Image (tube, rainbow, N blue to C red; front, side):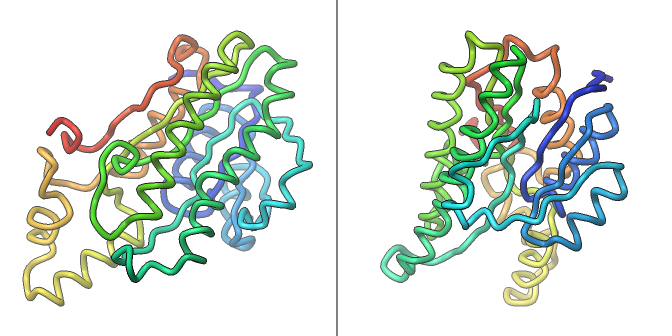
Length: 248
C-alpha cells in the first residue's frame, strides 16, 4: 500500500459514488481529505467517517471559483452529472451547465491548486473522465463533449506541470456501480420485461468484454496509485477501466 501520510487531498463530488470511494481510499492511505459536494449533509457524513473535512460548494457557481486558492497536494476532479436526449431536443442551458460543471470547474480548481503544488514541487491531479472521454454514444452530447474536453485539459496540465513536479491524468471507467446506474438498470429491466443481468449484458455492457459493472473501489484504487509518489513518471495519460470497451 502506497503511503500518503502528510498529503492533503480534495475530492469533488465526494459525498457519494466514485467520489466517496476515492475519499475513503485516500484517507485509508494516510491523506487528509476534504470532501467537496453540493450536498453538505452527505459531504459532512463522509468527512466525519474518514476524519477529514467537508466543503459545501456549488461548482456551477464558476464565478465564485475564479479567485480561489487551494493548498492541496492531490486534486481529484470527480463531480459530474448525466442527461440523455437527442441533440435536437437537448436544452442549450443544460448543455452549458454540464460543461461548466465538468470542464470549467475542473479548470478553475486546477488553476487554484497549481501555485501550492508548484511551490511544494509535488502535485497530483486526477480527473475522473469516462470511456466517453475516448468514445461517443448517441444522446449524450453534453457528457461526451465535456469528457473529451476534460481529456484535453488534463493533457495541457500535464505538459505545464511536469517540469514542476505536478502530474495530471485521467481515469476512464465504463459503467460504474453507483446509485444512478443501479436505478437505470432496474428501470430498464421493468420497461423491457427482462432480468437485470440481461440489461447489463445486452444494453449497458454490450461493448464490454467483461460483463459486469466497475466497482467504485476499483476506480478509487487506481486514483490512489496515480496520487502517489510511485506514479511520478505517469502523466498526460488516460487509464481505461472499461472491461475492454475501448479495445474495439
